[in-house]
Length: 469
Image (tube, helix red, strand yellow):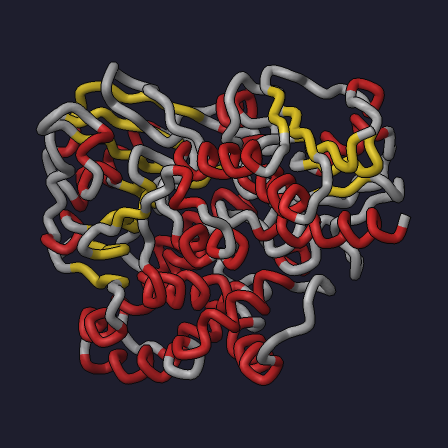
């Protein structure tokens, strides 16, 4: 009998398996698709030689993850590549605010009225970032805080809505960039703890950047898999699990799945019926004949580019997708241009690029034209560079990854109490009604992102139970 079986070979499932195998437990992973990866994959979606990331591409939380940093993943081929700028936020007048590794450079891009306010915002936390991120991403009761004072101060700053925090800034540049940071979790700007979301992304960039893995996001999944196999774990792909009886006997079962899928497989009925799925995304992957012709020079050297003319425009787009049930006329876009720093991703002189905008959960329309109109505002002539495009709306995203219910790439609405307490209001979020069944997906704390910490935290709950039995 195995000690543990993990269902789902995304970053959280693989991390949970590694953590258990490192502690001497026998582990097997079962994945429905024919390759590992979940939200961290790389595929040729458009033309031969153009390697795209179907979902996650830039990884500020990955390089800062306490779980990943404790593993020798570089030994297994993971190499982080850094663009000159982690992120840029261009404006219609051809200028841009930036999120740079340097706090001073970032503050200077906001202008003199907000530079000091930004420095004061990040100053208490950046010197203690490694301890703070460990405490922040390990909650709830998986580890005692190493620095409870700094964590409490962070909570006081970040728990209110981001709209409160943005009152510190007087000008549009800082407000728009910070609003864009919050939008990465597809949360309306006035939601609980959204200030913390924006602050975490900013601090992560200053601490270690927003890199891409050489060769694509698949490199993260492949490194985790190779490490797991060296530890004695096994991985079985093309193995769909429809019920617990489909799995071999084990002392514990760990699911890197949505709560909906776990309920169906384990027979939990309506246990997770109150769990809410959030707005979806519409994503376009591009093969380009050259770099994106951004008007703002800073955007040409950034790994990630946020596209939204103002805080108000970003708020309107999020509100439309999350609360009004319609696609925004001017979508806020998150874009990543990996080949700016990794030329291996495309044939010589060519580029890969992706952009996504937010749409209602389960939306069936086509946002391509709206996305490209928005890109043309900030990069005139963009359409002339397009060699091929691959589009994926909510339906296609859910078909590629069952955790993206209705196209929700966060595996659950990151709003209200559910941003902090997911998938249920519980001090033990990784446990389920069955004492041998656990959940470790992005539906559990600390939530969405390729960082493995949900898997790491769930593994702690699993090995404590295994040692007691």
